[in-house]
Structures are given as structure tokens and as C-alpha cells.
Amino acid sequence: MRRLATSASVLMILAACGSAGEMQNVQKVADARQRALTTKDKVLYASLLSSAYGDGTKNATSKIAEISALLNSFDQIEARFSNRKIEFVKDSATVTSDYELKVTSKNKSWKFSGTERIKLRKETGGWKIIGGL
Image (tube, rainbow, N blue to C red; front, side):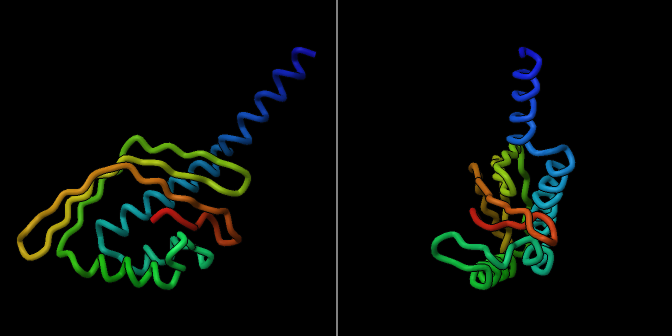
């Protein structure tokens, strides 16, 4: 009986954490987003968003337009993420990270830092961002 309870506990923890493969797949999306920011790659960034993206005020199309304009407005973007935590619930994941952004435009630089929380969902084509940007 004790062994059954322990096995059930382990299964519940694995279900909450996601498999190692799924963890890596979500990590790849987060890494690709960082790369898209630092290289100002609008096509890559747009490919990471789900067509079902919604944050209450913007859908996928308007969010992609907003991000594209933002990337165009800076000459250089440096993005660093740390303390990344990934939590799974069924086919959804939440990535929480501390971030530091340094943006440069017309020889002026600004720094921003804080904590972000991005929501992803597993879709047919892989993990996609559905909210939190």
C-alpha cells in the first residue's frame, strides 16, 4: 500500500512538472524568443505565437504588429533572462523569468528589468505562446 501511494505521488509530480522532453521543448521556445529579440527577427518571433494568442486586449495579429513595430524602433536590443521556472498543467505551461533588457536607439540606451510570466500551450505544431507578452 505504501509503495502504491509513493508511485501515485511520483506520477502526480511528473504530471505537474511535465516530462523532460516537454520541459526541453518549452525551454526551446523561450530561448528562441530571446534570440528573436536580440536579433530583431520578426519572422521568428511571430512563429512563436499561437494564432489563439490573447491577452485580453490584443489578439495574435495585433500583438505581432505591436512587436514588429517595437523591434523596428530600436537599433539594438540586448535581452537576458534568468531564474527561469517552467510549470505545467495538462497541455499548458507557464514560464516565469527575471529579465533585463537594454535597448538602444539613436545612440541613447535604456534599461528595463523585472519579472515576466508567459503562457504557452501545446499545439499540433509544438509549443506556442498564448499570452503574457
